[in-house]
Image (cartoon, rainbow, N blue to C red; front, top):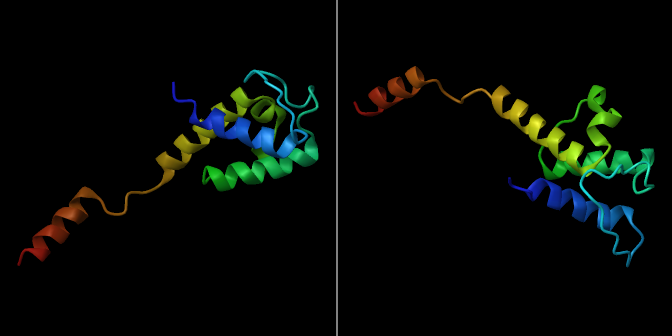
Length: 107
């Protein structure tokens, strides 16, 4: 499994949410809120970072604890949003359009 998403999220947590010089190791399943690593104000900044870094649009109705409680749940959410956005992007041209453009271009 590619852990790139988890690596990026952990780096953000270490750089932005933990006191400088802290070398806390935490499992992907650790509750970020219960452990005091993240609070509601920090979540807003974190969501903004996620949207920019992963080129996502996170709807307000998705800002629920189940999606943002741990690195694992955030990574799972990011992957699901990426898939949704990928599936909702229309192809620039259909196959028939491309065939027509090719035919017209070869005149």
